[in-house]
Image (cartoon, rainbow, N blue to C red; front, side, top):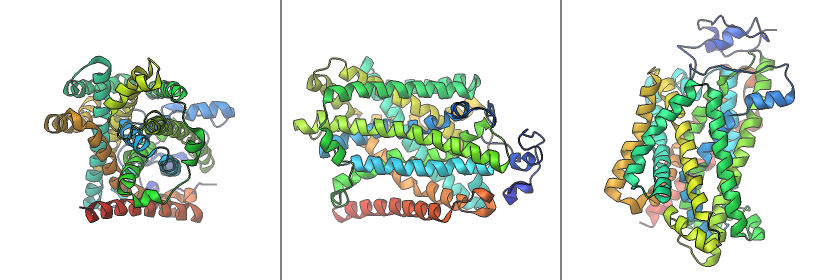
Length: 464
């Protein structure tokens, strides 16, 4: 039986490479307009449908963690710390809802990549007019710049806390991240994934230590996961809540995930792709569960270490670093906090450069040498960061981190709406098209994002 494939794939020049699991069907699925997403890593990691369950899980373990690092980047630190110190455990509900939304949307992103053989940027270029596609590319580049600004500033702050380096010097040092990405990707995509997972484990260990000494009020923390109407009425609380949403559900991660799931050499029949999708969704859901733990741990740390002790205005990461050890009575608390921040920034820059490559190639069909692509992506982050530090000064870093996350939240609909539209189209997805309940949930999420953004704008301008 010939599997259902998107019509646009049937008309393209087929690729002769075929999968043993679907020898008569793979050429249509593997067809591309020009070249595959991330061509240097495309289908380089073996995945056998005849392997054991655990081997399949391990074969697909990785893309979810690359996506998850964007959900625990330095931008999250600023918003979560600010929310925890100012409002206690109240905004834990926002973190929970944001992570559930992220799990759902990343599942749709993985579905698009596995079912259609396109990443989200490629799908946008094929579906929309050139003018609309160019607009979406510009919006996505703004989102990546806002995210990279947070990551570069976070890494620079960590270097300052650990080694006393000026922030501007720290920003310039982050340019070396380009070399790290090139070195790792040149040795295989698996090495990038292993490096990222190692850094995530380090961050989790640091926060486990912090939480142990912070001794949170667990009953109040559990109650904080219950949403409250107060969040919508309080402008300051809503501002941080939308910052958490923007820091959690990252627009460029939807582009990233739809591409990196294609690094697995799964079979191309409908059955094989459905199996690959199950393991991809399991991988991303588990990884985002770790992101939920780390985000909640940052806010709980802010609430337990500062809010309950009457320190309600500890929004600056540097202030938190100085206060943690004396407040908690743990000598390593501040050092581990800074180490976790550095690991978070390094992790996020790795995935940010990959996302920049995917977006540029997908929207514009521009193929550049890997080192040049990385330099352009890193330059988009370093130049604004250097200007921000030079103009606003080092004391304005944390407010700018929070602002960058709010900007991300406003960019989110421009990635979410096309993703829902494409995965709900039978012409593009074939048998993988979203079910009616999935479509309803997805559009409700999109509407909620638009509502929260509009509510924040109204509160800002109404009180101005």
